[in-house]
Length: 361
Image 1: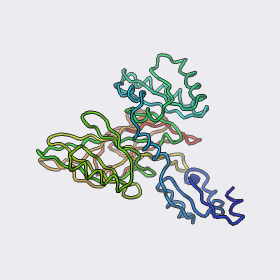
Image 2: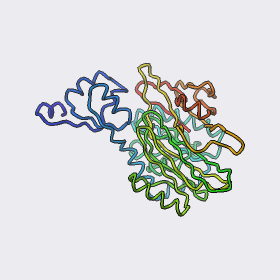
Image 3: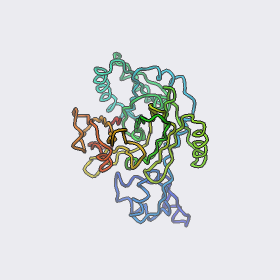
Image 4: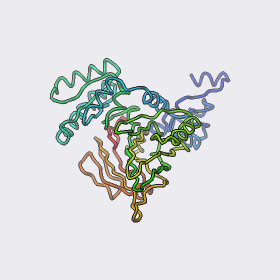
C-alpha cells in the first residue's frame, strides 16, 4: 500500500515503524524508498532510523497511554480480590496457540518451584480471547493442584499483582521498580531525583502507598501535573510527581517524606528485549542519575539496589557483583555507582522466534 501511494505522489507516513533493528535490517532500503516519515513508538528508534537516512519522529508508545488510562480507573472487583492475596503473581504466556502450548508448561514448572518457597502464592492468568482462555483451561485441567485462575481482565491483573511471569509480545514491556525513601531527620523532606530508564523503555505508571494502601497516579499533561503537585505540596498530602525530561529520562519528586519515617513508591516502565544477531539480549535496570538522597546522618551511605531476574533461557549475570543463583536466575545487590556505570544487569538467550519469558523485579 505504501508503494502504491508513493508511486502516485502521495506523502507516506508510517505509524509504528517495522522493527528493523530486531529482524531483517535489509528491509530498510525498500522502506526508505516509499516512506517519507516514520512515527516511532520506542525512544531509540528515532536515532536508529535517522542513521539509515530515514526521517523519523518518536511519538510515544500506545501501550503506555493504555496503561495510564487503566491505572486511572477505579479498582475492579477482580483487582480487589487480588489485593486480598498474600502473594499474587500473574502468568502471561502469550495469546497465540503455539505460545500457550510451548510456554505455559514451562511456566507451570516455575509455578511449582515458586510454591515450594511461597506456599500461599496465587497465580492469575489473564486472557481476553476465548480461544486462548480455552487452551489455558484445557492445559490446567491436567494440573488441578496448581492454584492458577484463568480470568479475562488483563488490566486488573497487571495493576494488582506483585510480580508477573511474562512471555512474548507487548507483555515483555512491563517492568516494576520499588523504592522506599527514609527520612532520618525530624522535619518533613522532599525527595527529588532524575531516573535513567533502561534502553528502549518509557515510564508507564507510578504508585504511591498512602496509609499502607497503594494509590495509582493519574497521567496528564506536564503543566497540569506540575500545578497539581505544587498545590498538594502546600497541603502536605503525600503527592508524587513523575515528569518525562527527555529520551529515557524522568524526574521524580515526592513530598513530604515524613520525619523519621518512610515513603514507598513503585515506578513502572515499558521496556523491550532487543536480541543481537547472536540471539543474546540485554536486560537493563532503571537507575538514578542524580538526587538529593543517599546521605545518612553519620556519613555517606551508598545507595544500593536489590536485583532479581528470572528467565527460562540461558540467563547470565552482567556484573561480577551479581550471581547466578540458579540456571534460570540472577540475583544480588548493586551500589548506585555500579549500576550507573553499566545499567545492564543480565543477558538472556532469546530463542527463535524471539519469545523470551522473564520476570524482572
